[in-house]
Length: 265
Image (cartoon, rainbow, N blue to C red):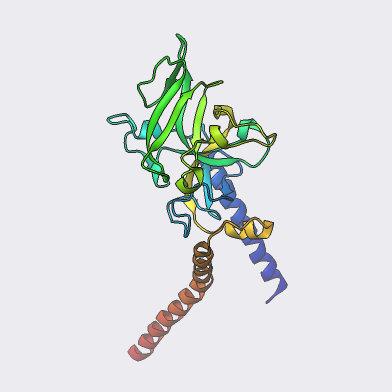
């Protein structure tokens, strides 16, 4: 192939990538517009993973907080509430990407359970519940725990500031705990309620499996399931073979048209 043709096609490919990234950045209002999921803390099926949930190796589009109102699990499960029935990624409420205590270590992608808001008259309000002006917060969420028949319960929590209580969707690994009980930051401190300014964005559209390649290259792919690798291999095979198949079909169609024209003459 001519060198100039190769150079032109390479430039076209690079241009398309830049255009795609630019378009996604504009659409989401955040940069980078996508993140690769590294851990299994959001898995709904810990053995195989599942399309629609957030699994290791998935690419997730990050929507800027300015572009989307965050709806908590409590609001999405409030009977007759404004957001009753709202779901994303297979469960009620939004999934947020945040920095632990505003630090610089790897961001976390977990579901927002509740948000505590200061009441002007004192105490705390919890959106999506009947808790108003409470000195401490106790709430049972309609979130089934894997261990036993209990529900995820936040008991006698006294917020240090306004913010969200969060947890991963993986009931097998979180033990029905929320992050503010068990998750620590880069300095070993327990993560407090997630402030608005710590939130990078909300998890929007998911592209399954594709990010596993990046994790493999960085040596952090140990949590990617064998099922995800198999699905990725099939996906890559389809992408590679699709142009060839399309060309074969096009050639066959054009050949038939030429034969028909020859017969008519």
